[in-house]
Length: 555
Image (cartoon, rainbow, N blue to C red; front, side, top):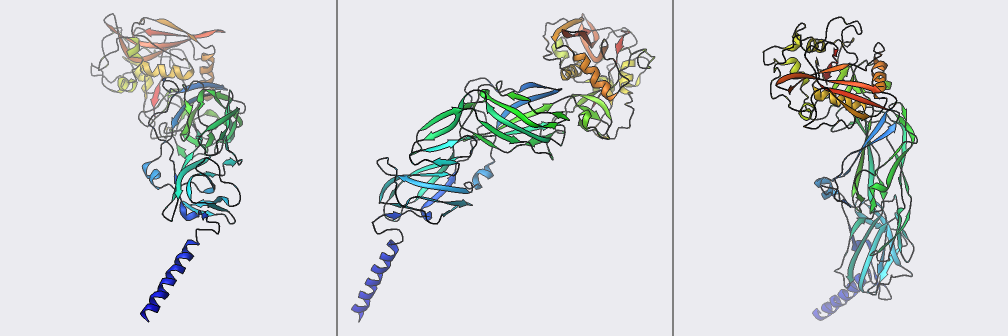
């Protein structure tokens, strides 16, 4: 009886083993490679600290004049994935295809020579009716998503597709084998971040093209080991979101508009790319037809498996409003402008703006004098080291302190209308409307560096200085024509009572050492129409009769 039971058990084991083998073995001794044999992991986008360069030059922002009072400040940065995202992110959901190449380098063809299916949450579910059956041996497996075209003898990847290809070599023998794919991005992805002082962009679309022939289709060998490019001029399309609820991390009062990603083939120089607006308005200005290249962003290459954001700060003349917000005049709504922004507020420093009127004797109903000081003693008054040259003076941003902190003589000049009329006038400026913005400070007489920032905002660039530059009154020339007209249009738009902003000596609260005397400084805008504009600048005396006060305020 025991012998009979042992024999029956032996027969059962044989039958069970045979049935198990039939799950993977076919009648012709081939093995079906099922979804249980595959695993997939993503190649995460590279998160280097610096961008790879084709040259050693550094990346510096590029400024482009778009016309209609618009400028674009352009920069490029590489995106970074957080460690948490990298650790938990599965392969992208989608449809994938897998085929095999035998040890001789020949693709397996014929019936049941490739399997396809859908990956969702990292799990592969094969399509009904597809099979991959192989004779035991060593194979290279190739997996790709639907962004890749399979031509039978090669694979192709076109621009503007998020193509993924993974390869793995495995020996099929017995049951202890597994095919592990690392799915690699075959393109670089690029998006655009538009930053502006508005929360609305109306129908803005753009296309990203190449200015010279660049790879637009890559053809891969059957094992995906070699690539042959075909060149052309691609046109990837982008749409800017219509609204933004996201504030820029640096320019804290500006909004960000972030496009979706588009894809370009690798090794394309940024210098050979161009963005052209195809529709839309922002700041009330039409963008259609405006364009710029990335030619001045150094010799960078868009690299495979890298993720880039091109940041475009749309710059125009901005106004400070009574509620402490910043924007363009065309979108003021019920707000009242109180100043022209000379320096934008960031996450590390205050912004500041100049008033929409000035104070000079016999101008705009003002009858008093606007002297820096009502006596010509030229003694040291500002606390701390005084500038000794024009470079140091141009970095002085302490106008608020010079106005409201006691000077070396213990006097708060903001409170002295007789001895320090310029400081008093600036501090007691009335913008004509109640200020409701808690972030808006007190009006003050600007330092020289703050006047320089204002001039640069108007377009006096590059406004540079040297340490051996003359401190006595002198000209700085070569600036574009029409800048003073621009200044007058900016101010008059918000305050029609101001019709002239030229030929005034705008005082600074800065004192510079000049021949053992401590003298005030000024900026004077001079028109040389029709060819150019000049700046007349340097030191002056305390009691200069035609000095002019242009109040500033921080926000």
